[in-house]
Length: 173
Image (tube, rainbow, N blue to C red; front, side, top):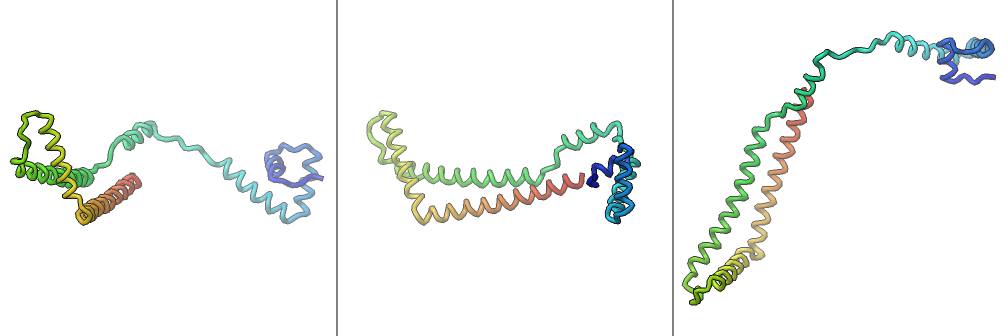
């Protein structure tokens, strides 16, 4: 006895069964409501697939698609944001360097008497380290850390916002 599988039903619809198999399948279909429903569903799918026509894209489809892919979305706000964040960090760095330099120059009367440039360099490095230690105390580190954390949080907000806007623009294409 043949088990009525989807493969057998497809062969029945396509007319690929032998005479003995065909008789068995028709007997099963005639006596089983479930088999009739399955055959009907398979015939519907078969007819829909037979009537389906493959659509061909327009001749310039590839070139249009490539132009859309290559074209970069405008990122005006992102450029200004990156410029402002980098300017902020540069200004803070310049302020720290200016403070160190002014402190060293104000205490310049203590420069060693030797005119050896190596000893002058060592003296300036020692003074710079002293000033850096003075600037980066525990309380100042907290303030500087807060400022940098705040800048990073704001940067992350604008970054994700620009990402969301770019994603919306791509979805519109």
